[in-house]
Image (cartoon, rainbow, N blue to C red):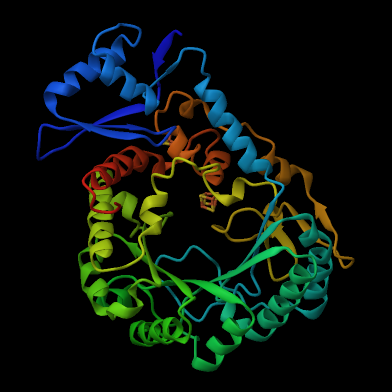
Length: 437
Ligand code: SF4
Ligand code: SF4
């Protein structure tokens, strides 16, 4: 059989030793070689059909660093992407019961307007879902806003109705929520958990002083103390609750992240899914314009390692090098929708939700009426841009943000530059067993 080296082998030098890690971004295989052995490995990868170093070659074949010449690796990636985009098993639905918010975060990109989902719209939504949910095996409902807890009564009413539809058709259901956490009183926690909302994303932007400059109430008052206590109450209420503890960082707050990590009691850390996101968008305090890309990756990998040591769930760190990834983000999936409080339907949660950008809307009969121009803009485009075809990180990235691709006409966006440095640093940590065993 004629062999070739996989196009997706990347070699990463270990800074503190003469070892080299080889990682394959398509198959997820990894091996670490000392300098002398690595020079043999390089020879084999250069001439995979030579008979030299048979045992090493056999190992490299088993790990798919060397593959049959006939393998069309790009076709594997295209197929994965297509499966993710068209996935008929899973419905992803984000519901925004309001665009209003009680916070005035300095980096927020949303326009907060007084708004709420009225009874006719929630009826239309439930009629639509009564038809849609039975078509799928797995349904993910995500409450988002604005601040969804400003509309607690309609949120509970809709969640219970969705739960009943899913149960009557034996469809697996997960209900999640992104909230600023401020309104999570004990009574609200009981209601939410009672109707099956078991996964939450709550943001604390570093230590108290830093958080309180970035995330204040509309009247300027601080929010840290109350959110922190509410997170403790939510985690203690049920051990099956999972909280994604999101920290948005930039040049002003990243040094305070360890302080926050030490503040949570040990016994709830395993329920806290630590995730770090550079502040993005057009605001002047975004991380991308204020911190060097390589430095962002170093912060990410160091803080994930600290979080792992302290007993937090670091699932999101491992997702950064997920070699089974199907799409860049769920907005690429055909069966993914964001329903606004007024029944307008969108794809991406980062935006202003202007009517002219909607991909469709729900009519009173509970039918999804497509607006073809915008629908096609999102869903009828190539899976990848030209810049992605030669990229060795394509299998762990899957093509970059679709919104950026649409808006920049084929440009994959600034976060693209983070993929190689993030991957290398996380691979090093995994190879050195800091994040994963
Ligand atoms: S978006 Fe960037 S990192 Fe991702 S596959 Fe395309 S070129 Fe590679
Ligand atoms: S901004 Fe890009 S990555 Fe984020 S949700 Fe929208 S399409 Fe997805």
